[in-house]
Image (cartoon, rainbow, N blue to C red; front, top):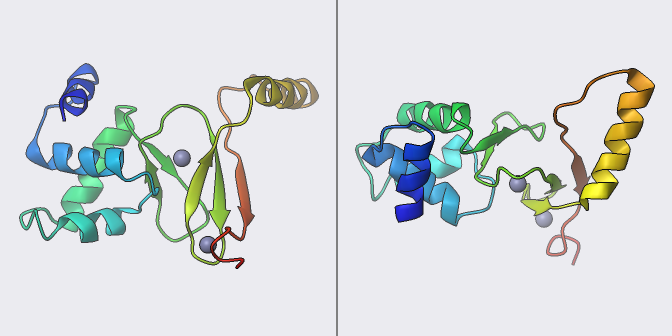
Length: 138
Ligand SMILES: [Zn+2]
Ligand SMILES: [Zn+2]
């Protein structure tokens, strides 16, 4: 829990029990949960937290750069505590999302190419792959 408190402080967020609970959940569940999933999993042990609190807390964590919000084309956003640049692979059957870390030079080559061809100065990118996971294709 200490690293979590440190991270919150480093990012100028007041350490509140709600923030710590939600950040802790994300930190230990790398399933890219939606706000609803987080809420459903923590509400039993934290009856005072509402779904609105979860949304508000996620926004503050996102604004301070501790979590990233990802949009995989569903109605709700998913949240990711992994803030290093990486790609996502999404199972279209069970909606599970896993991380994929492409090699840096591969990404750099693509960025260079895109940048040259579009004359954009690029700051970031998002890459999503869609398919059927090992479990679902059995
Ligand atoms: Zn699946
Ligand atoms: Zn991720």
